[in-house]
Image (spheres, helix red, strand yellow):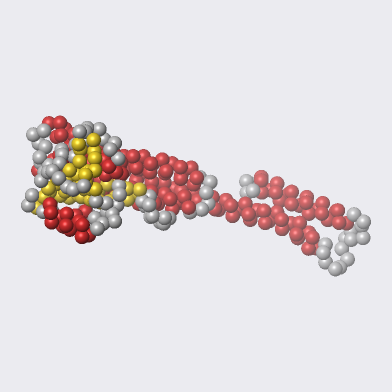
Amino acid sequence: MQFLKTIEGQLVEIQQPEDGCWINIYPPFNKDAVQQLCEELEVPYDFILDSTDINEQSRFEREDNAELIVINTPVKNETDSDYDADFITVPVGIVSVGEIFITISAKPNPVVDFFLNKRLQNFDTADQKDFVLRIFERTVYFFMIYLRKINNSRDAYQKELYNSSRNDELLKLMNLQKSLVYFSTTLRDNNSLMTKIQKVDFIHIREDEDKSDLLDDIIIDNAQAKEMSDIYNNILNKSLDTFASIISNNLNNVMKQLTSITIVLMVPTLVASFYGMNVDLPGSGNPYAYLITMGVAVCLSLVVIYIFRRFRIF
């Protein structure tokens, strides 16, 4: 739990919450400390608890003098499983109570980290309306960044798939597809959230032309990100079907080549089998019988290779 405040243009950490400060809560959570904070600031504990639910949907709510906005943000999935999505979405709770601003998330995420790392100029923790808009803006920005990474990864995996007969790259593409499903659903919900906030003027910016215009731009950018996600998802769906067939075809080619090699090697084995019998055979008394036998076997193998090459089997 960090208490931060903009003092003389710099974001600094303070020891206790005070007016104009920003409180960020990250896991692991100290339940007693969080409950005590909620009691001191008169914030409903459900606001904090709901924000830590990984499946919480984007929404906003007002209770007494506290306001809650939950927006889902993109996060790189750190699990080691080969069957999990590369990127997931986690909710960030934004609580405004009086002159104090609170953010809480079930996992550390790049949106909040962007502000913690002091990368935004002219950032004032006391300007809660601007803070909310900047969180919205950064959320859309990181969706765009991760969508480009997903598309680049798709191109790389597809190049590997052209000559692959394994399922590894196909599984990687499926993980990317899961990420795009998460993104498409979340971007749709976030778009609905921001549109409703704009309609009911939940953050009270209707009279501020600059902030209203900024929210308009963010909603437009979010819609573009949603369209990008849908396009990439459609491309990936088609690619998965195509490359499943390519892998099957590559495997068939390998099997065909192995079968051809087996047939070619079978010819000298057959000749050697005939002349390995313990009976009188034509030419067995010839001093060059071994060389003649080997020559016949090699010639027959070359004939088989020529036939296979002629009909593009080998």
